[in-house]
Length: 60
Image (cartoon, rainbow, N blue to C red; front, side, top):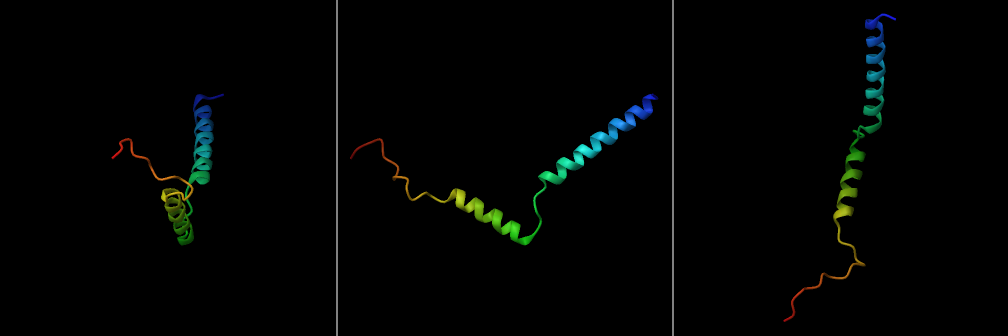
């Protein structure tokens, strides 16, 4: 097999793989998806109600 043909086949396989990975990992671009992402981040940062308040290591 001609080395140029082998290199072209390898380049096509890499290109197809890169396109598949890009398509699977891209974020949705709709307005609702942005709102949902923001809501998830705020939920993760919100304090949990079942957690006890932090204790001080010193006593007064």
